[in-house]
Length: 210
Image 1: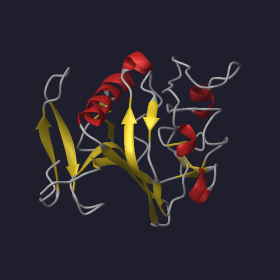
Image 2: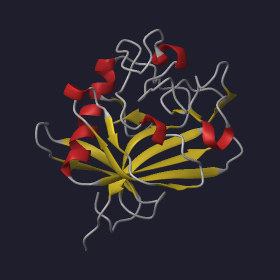
Image 3: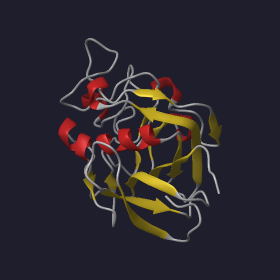
Image 4: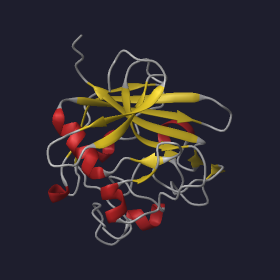
């Protein structure tokens, strides 16, 4: 996304291996041009989806969406990026987590979360434990457990380990999840059973040249 612009808007980009596609640029949350890769604000869009849907992406930029793992891989491969996670609870409080070196592998490596870099922020670090692990959906169990399917147990999709301290693609609940981390969870702020009101995952270039 261009760094000098106001408001929020789509931009068409072209990256190797993919047809041209639009990205949503946000200039409000961080004050710079960041690409929104996931947005959640209500119960209307179901995130409990299969591998193919996460590969391609779903939703739309006028509401909630996920950009898709193929596009996410292509973007992170194009240059060094950082990841910015913006959370809002049901009292209107907001916090963030920033990771300064974000990269995921291609589908051949099951979209493994290879690097995250250093954490900064005030939401707590609930993602570093997932570094080095592959993406899982309910129909593609790639977590570290032989006898459990974390995607099914947590009602979501994520880079599950055994299972996770975050689950931002879990079910949408109002504040409280009926079971551990089955909602839109980020343990290190409001605990494992709290499900947030709003969430955005954004990414911006690690190095900016003007």
